[in-house]
Length: 224
Image (cartoon, one colour):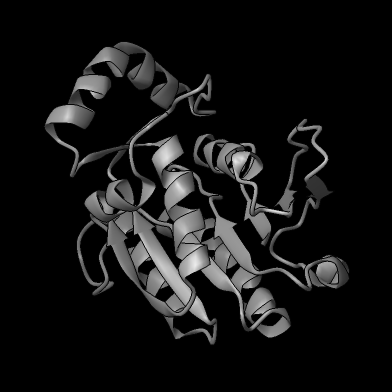
């Protein structure tokens, strides 16, 4: 399996990359992002591309892949709806529309979030934008397209969030999150489970839909 990964330098993306590197069926991972990941592995190829709103210059390097795991995202805190939409909807759709044209047999997995608003009409700004993004992705002619809606994600194996507020949250609640995974598995998953669930979906092939936190945990199995 050959995989494209957007957002490898973020918390979720780093967890997904780790699982791809551990999986013997993954032949190659192409990471695409604005900044270098610093990962030096035989399986990894990296493209640093500053303008993710326009992928035309790197299209030739995006052909021949079986799956795309889109883990790129930003917090909506302090952003207007138009600013948040430009990043969340704009960058995602540039990648997805390009890849659906180059690799129509691909499985595309998008990391959304619990509470996403599929109606696009709700009062919560980020949920409306995420809902619009999900809906647009599900209309594209991929072989498979899945929207992952995790709730709380606990980072494992030394992985950290790049957002200071989230770093503080995880540092403060780490032991509680471990207990939360046992008591409330429907709401708490891990970076490991998210990555393994994506790989399971990519192997399955065919179909499309929305996976909530409990579905992700079930697909991802027990943490190592």
